[in-house]
Amino acid sequence: MIGGSGFYSFLEDVTELHVETPYGPPSDALFLGELAGRQVAFLPRHGRSHGVAPHRINYRANLWALRSVGVRQVLGPCAVGGLRPEYGPGTLLVPDQLVDRTKARAQTYYDGVPLPDGSASNVIHISLADPYCPKGREAALTAARGRGWEAVDGGTLVVVEGPRFSTRAESRWHAAMGWSVVGMTGHPEAALARELGLCYTSLTLVTDLDAGAETGEGVSHDEVLKVFSSNVDRLRTVLFDAVGGLQTNDARDCLCSHALDGLDTGLELP
Ligand SMILES: [Zn+2]
Image (cartoon, rainbow, N blue to C red):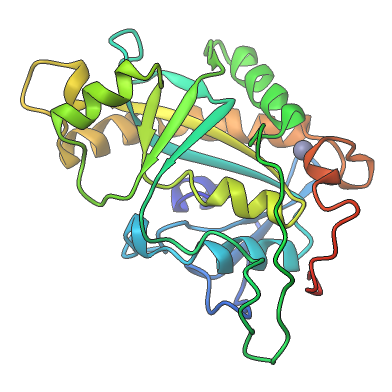
């Protein structure tokens, strides 16, 4: 689970584990615990003190570190802006599509560039037509419904580079394209997870209406934090329930688990 301390600080018997990767250090240590009889690793996406900006996150190290401790299914909750008036603050949306508008993020393991140990990946191309795990999405939607929180089933998350918020023109453009919500961290997380054969499910919590979808001052950081903190308890509950609804790692049989079938990555995946 990639999310802040608001999620793992409620678990008992959490072990902190520092992991190194060929891509450098992840955002923070991994916090290992148990939930619903499953082993779970938590990684604070922005570091425990929230000091890593969205465009500075080492996404490759984060996903690699998670896989190296045995993670095969990732839940990636994130805060987003709503691009439609009906997706107001407090809306939970489980997207089924993704648009990448980031600019300067390392977003592949398979670019042939040598790693520190001298090994290099092959240049390969994976499918991301359906970027999210269908089984994971179902688990998330079922968990939300079970807690009386009717989540929006499907929609497009557009990911911008940040750290600034969108201009009104950008926001109106995103909305006119039919996209649903906008955030800063959902990509390349989803793509990198797929490149490692991991399931990835995004749960987006709307904290504000984006600049083009409302007529006021535009989104502010304070507003985002306020809405996020007032929803974090029920989001954590839904996430914890969703963990119990995931496939077992051994029984995975979704498109994500077959992403690397027949491909020679050239890398020894952890
Ligand atoms: Zn999957």
